[in-house]
Image (cartoon, rainbow, N blue to C red; front, side):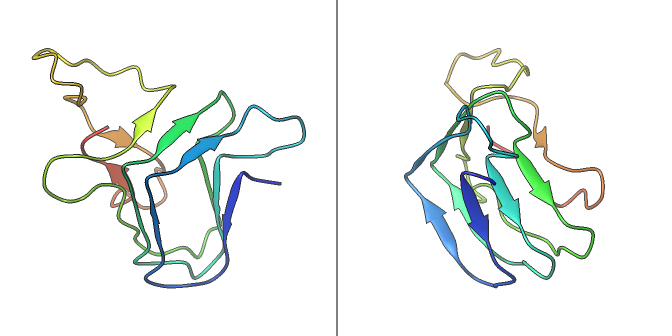
Length: 106
């Protein structure tokens, strides 16, 4: 069971939340069911060590940042922030199945 589960929906928005996936029995921070696309996730704090997002094979593209300058806080992000502005310099790749599903401003 994930912390947040999105059924096959489009245009849902998850904004300004704390998603903690350290609880026993959780499979991922965010689970996107097949057919989920065009959902927006930004300004969230995603905390924990389990997989960040679980995508079923038939998922579509989802938006993981505000497309301008800010995305989500990911506690497991290991990229660098050379200018120390609190936004990672390297996009966080959430899945290799669909490279569009990246947080460009982690």
